Structure formats: structure tokens, C-alpha cells
Image 1 (cartoon, rainbow, N blue to C red):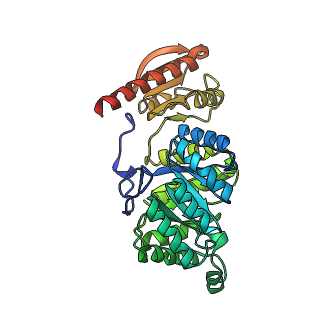
Image 2 (cartoon, helix red, strand yellow):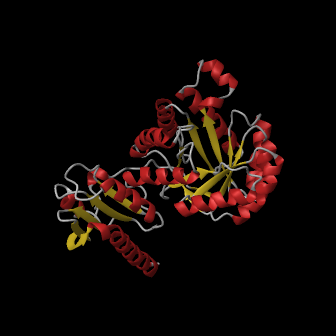
Image 3 (cartoon, rainbow, N blue to C red):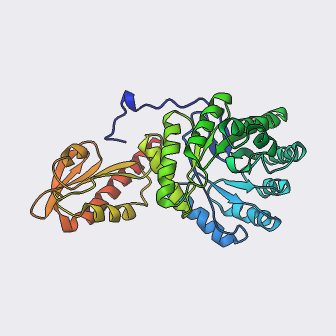
Length: 373
């Protein structure tokens, strides 16, 4: 961010992982941590699924996963892939033939769950299809669907069982000379997922897909994901993320970016710094931020905006943001640009004015980026 300089104590040293590709999106290595989501439409509803993918891509999704539960879905996938603006991951459970059909349909990646895809022979057939059609793969271990022998060995889902499952299937892929894969060890329990991911990160150089599975609704799932994923990302673990919410996939993308933005790992759109408001506020901070979040959702360039209700912390926060507004008295406040006092503005015209200033700054940043390229 232009007015949020990097400090040594802000640095996160990312775990070194092998670089793979999901379509045209690099995952692992030094590539940016990618944000994923998953459609919740019927895959056979091609127009509805494409519309949801496009909305997710507009919100910033780098990769979108689509469930392929039956033959009709794998047939529909071909048109979905053709119309999608981002790489598509085919989500496969139980029926290994759906994975082969999805590779043939143009999926960029096949997500298989080792616990329910079948025996080694079937997995090898999926590997052959992935090689033939240039797909990467994700080994998706889930605490809720571990192999029976591992549950018998360990007695219950635990980090050791999840990592053993993942490593067993890594060996199958590597023995078949297939290295274009990433891996996840998801659980709905934050402690279980975090422990499994930490052990996995030490045991393999494969790129890691982070997620707290079945995290819950928008509020509870966001909090659970922020705690689980945030701590792992802070430790340098994770090359791509999916926030699992019982909500619109666009919300998953937004939460994913907010988690990454809070750690300085990705910068996209407007980062609004705002106070919780109190009796000192010179305008309705909560309503103003709510409106601004909606009206600035289309901004893609990374920017910072401070909206502070009074002069206690307002000027200090504004010093570190691209655009700022600090409440004052007599129905007006101070506008800050590039960290400096610029001019006063009435509260009733402030929202439109702030949107104008942010859009102007975004256009300048976009022009600078284009010129640099």
C-alpha cells in the first residue's frame, strides 16, 4: 500500500513449495497466494453456474471449483469451462470416471478425495487422464471422510491420520511420475486442521491448499476461517485458500481477500480503516462505512481509505492512507489525500466526494500499472 510501508516485524516468510499451475494460475513457489471459491448451483444449470463463476471472478476469485457428481454434470462442464474467465477445478467424489470425463472436458485441475475415490488402480487411471489433458490435481484429505483402515489404526480423525492419508496418496502420484499436484488436509475443527497442516507442511514440498471445511455461516464461518487460516498463513503455510461458508460464493472470495490483506499477503481493492464509533463521532460512521463498502466494491486497485469519526485518532490514521475523512464539528470534516490534509467537506456530501476521490486515485494507479507494463 502506498501509505502503509513494510516494516521488518510485518514480514511473513513463506514456506518454500514446488510451483505448479492450475490453468494459467501459478500456485506455490513465489506466486501470490490465490483465492478460490466453489459454485453452489446445480452444475447441469449451465447458465446459472456460469453466472456464479463470473460473479466470483469479478469479486477477485483466481480459481473456481465446480462439483461433478454425475455424467450429466461432466457433460455440462465442457461448456462451463469454455465460458469461464478463470480456471475451473472439477470436484470429484466416489466416481473416478467423472474425473476422467472432467479432464476430457477441459478442467484445469481435478480435486479428488483419497478416502472415497477408490483403489490405486482407479487413482492411476485418473493420473493418466490428468497427464493426457494437462490437468493438475489436488489431493483433498478431509477429516470427515478418512479411509477406514486409518480410522481403525488411529481410532478417530486426528492430525497423524490425515497427514498419513495425504502422504500415502502423494506417493501414488509421485510413483506415477506426476508432480503437478497440491494437497489439503481440511477439518471443521480449527485445532485439528491447524495441527494437520503444520505437520503436512514439514512433510512435503507440495503446494498447500488451505481451508477450514464446513466452517459455518457468514459470521461464524468468517471468524473460524480467519483464526484457522490466519494463523497458518502467519506461519508462512499456504499457497492457495478457500474460505468455506454457507453463503454466496462471492462472500467467500471477499473474506479470503480480507484475510490475506490483513496479513499483507495480497492487495486488492479498497482496505477501509474505520473506527467502531462512539459519542464523539461527527457523522454516522457505521452507516457511512456500510455504504462505502458497497459503492467501492468494484475497485480492483489496492488502496487504503480511513473513515474515522473524530479527531482523536483520525488525523493519525489518515497519515497512513491514500484517502481519508475525519469527522469534525459544525457538520463537516477534513479530507486527507496521500496522508495530508487537503480540504474540508460537509458530512452530507462526504460519501459521494470520497467515492470520487477513490475512483480518481484508482484510475491513476491503473494508468501507472499499464504504463509500467
